[in-house]
Length: 260
Length: 300
Image 1 (cartoon, helix red, strand yellow):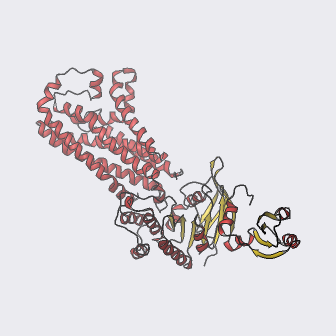
Image 2 (cartoon, each protein chain N blue to C red):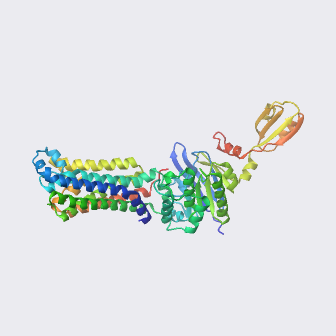
Image 3 (cartoon, rainbow over the protein chains, first blue to last red):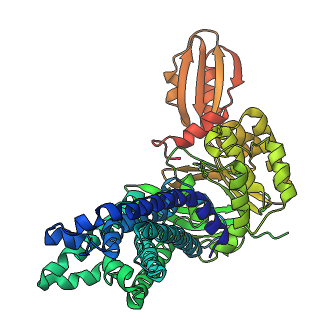
């Protein structure tokens, strides 16, 4: 791994990630503060099954279901995926399109080591966000009156971080393999959104319910870590997906021409 | 000192389709040479440099730098080479100092005193973000990063682009010192005065193919010769156009300018049929030489 590249990538991206992290903490505090006032009332609402499934199929009347629907189903993964995708594509295809990568790779650094450094930087960024999320959840749940253990919050944040890393690795692989920033951003976002839709709708139709296993979202949220804690199998699948995609990125950039 | 060429390419090609790219480049550059690489836009100069640094892969042929294969030994080569790209881009939000620190770290560190001396020599601004720097000041950073590890070979694509005359002078002096130390410079340029001033030999590319490799002195020798012949009265230039070896002839009042290749015998004899007041050589300037090689309708 190229340590100077890791440090440089973190230097260029951490401010963006930290800003997103502070925003996430603010949202988590707000969601916690709202629960005592509206949580029980919303819990009695009748919501169409499809929409309910997209929001995690949780009971909004409980603090666990409240956070799962408000943060776990959309805001948390959306934010971490967006930060990971933008960071991964900017630090690979973005630098190539900006003609910086050509100069960097004229120095004695192997392309694969450079990509591994970028992947580690993305992992560090999602970990920072996940820690911010954990802190925000602890404070938010306390504001809401408690009801989720710190361990379960940590389990959720672990699976969130791995989901972010895996989604960012999709952008890393496409960015490194093609050198096209818009393609890396667009295709990775599509993978995340389609995964979210599949995870929400596939279980409603028994014939295609197996499709949920193709969605990264399923491994992030399927076992409801806020309620049940960490799922080792899901963690392994997300981690393995991220590592596999990083390997694809490292190999694919090795043998292709850099764009002028 | 080794006599092995520092750069040796054999049939080096990169085919982008539609006639674009580089085709069958055979070239040798010796140790301590300052070698000019010329050609119109799109001729393949930058493509050649990117091939040498393994930024792109050859479609055919091979290249050796410092005795190493450009593809298989790329990492070892890049340790010993300094590169300035023609379209230099740096991290816009970072200061020049941060950029140079990063690039130095990629090399495992450089001699700080050498870097500082280059900064002083080029009067580079290291404290402002790159996006606030002028083209010339960014180019200074590009030159410093290319030279700061004392590479054995420098590959410089349009190195003086955007530099003011004083900095150009510093750069040319630096090239002289580098060459005197036995290090090699391979540079492309559109600035003919620079080529004339700093290069020992040069190559001209046209449409991806090597047209000529020679010293400037020899190129001048084989260039089309011209005579300016002043007659006692106006003479029809067509008399000269039909002569063997004559490439052009035109009259300006009672003076005829005749361009020809090979011996001047036929031209002088034809002129002697008239009253000749004076014959003066009409030397091609550098631009004429290059334009002749650049022209696509010229079979040179």
